[in-house]
Structures are given as C-alpha cells and as structure tokens.
Image (cartoon, rainbow, N blue to C red; front, side, top):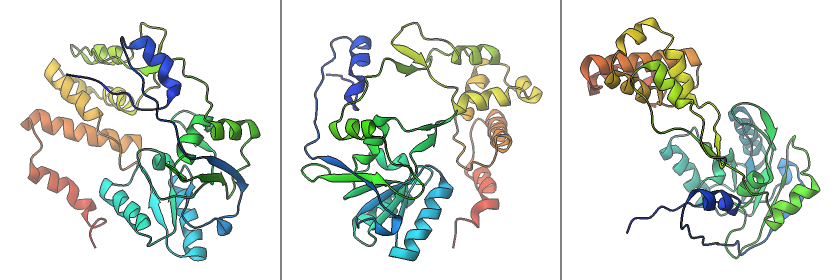
Amino acid sequence: MSETLFMGSSIAGNVIKKLVDEVKFQNRPRFSKLKYTGYKKISHLPKRSAIVAFSIQSVYAIAEIIKRQKGGVAIVMGSLSPQTRNAQVRMYQNGEVDYIVATDAIGMGLNLDLNHVAFAETQKFDGENFRNLYPHELAQIAGRAGRYLKDGTFGVTGEANEIEDDVVIRVEDHRFIPLRSAKWRNKKLDFSSLNNLISSLKSLPSRIELGISRQADDLRSLMRISQDDEIKDIADNPKKIKALWEASQIPDFRNISDGEHTKMISLIFKKICEEEELSDDWLREQIKPIEKYYTS
C-alpha cells in the first residue's frame, strides 16, 4: 500500500479535504494545559525555560545576558548545522544548562524538557515584511512547554510587549482561524529556454484552494544569474538549463550578499558544465580559504 501523510495543525483540514480525494483525518489533541503568565524579566525566568527571538543578533545578545546572570546557555537556530544544533539540544537535555535561547526553529520538530517559553520578540520578518506572529505561530512555539501530561506556561520577556488578551485565549484554548488556501508552486517546469523556465516557475495556480507562494530564494537567484550574458550563452540547451536551476537552489548559508551568492552559483554551474561533476579536489580548493574559521 502506498499512502501520503500530512502532519500538522487542524487549521489546514478544510483545504486538504478539498484538494485530496478520500482523505482520512486522525486528531491528536494536547493532553496538558498551556497557560499565559505575562511578563517576566530575563533574570526572573524559571529554570528549564526557552527564550525565543527572531534574529541572530537578538539570540546572541540574550544568550550573553543569561550567561552573565545565570551561567551556561544553549542556542538553537535554523542556520546552525545539524551536528551543532543537536549538540546544543543535548547539552540542555542533559541538564548541563537550564536555559535555551532559540529562533522559531525550536517549534519545528524539537521535543524538549521545557517548563516555560518566553518570547523576547513577537514580530518576525517573513521574507517580505515585519509582522506580528499569528496566533497559531505563537501556539506552535509556546506549545514546546509542558508536553504530554505535564502542563506548561508561556509569556514575554525583554523588550517584547504583552500578548493581547484575545490572542492569549486562542493559544490557551487552541482555537485558530482555518486556512483558506495552501501555498503552491508549479512543478511542471519548462527547460526549453531560460525565459520559459522562469515563466513556468511564475505560473499561477488553477484552483481557488491554492495560493501563489512568495517569490522564493531559488527563483530570485535564477533571475539574477540569468542577467549574465556569459551564463545565458552557456545555458543553451535543456540539460544545462536544468543544471543551472539545480545550482540556483543551493541555499545561501553564508548570508553575505546576493551578489556573492550569485557568484558562487555561477562558479558551480560553469564547473559542472565543464566537467559534469564537482571533484573532491575542486571542492577542497573552494573550502580552503574559509577552513581556518571552522578548525581549532
């Protein structure tokens, strides 16, 4: 038997029901309670707390405060390598430190021994604008506190404002507005030319239950690199255009600048076109200039 599992919040139920024939739903309600406790200074947060912020600068600044006032602290961010993130989580879970500072990465698949979640920020940049967290986003993160039969608490700290009463009620009672549509991007891509590939990536959905997603990083990278006349000359057939698209999907882990990331994609694409693969020796040469920053 072949089956597909959609795991997530029940707010997506109506959309999935309209998009997928003969779908079956199984609900797993939370057994413990989640209670809002308002504002607490960082220095007054209870042990086994997570402090949540949404920028690297804020995370490290808060971690430094806790180190000075409380001792050790673990850090969890989506930009950390899996090995580093797991080591930080392990340090917290083993009781070596009693506090963890994290971005919203903490709400994605991490089961931690938390009693309290404190939001140092309740706004985030979503790729286009700074906005307040939606109630279901607050709940996803705050819900890390407690778990199973153990009740948990959440609140605010640092420079964050108190969460509005109606939002608190929604989070505590797990009552959220159902989604009206799901984000979509075309998977039937046209590799006959660069312009056709970009057009196919920008295609609009044909169903009302599907909404167009914001312009993704990989599409922006492809559009930038497609302005390079040399790249356009090289990408002259479907095979090479597909290789360029795959190179454009490399995440910008360095987060230096769009220009530097485009240069890296261009370099990788040209090398693949020359030799059809990236050799170990070539990769070592690219890594060598930054290797000193990652070795003791």
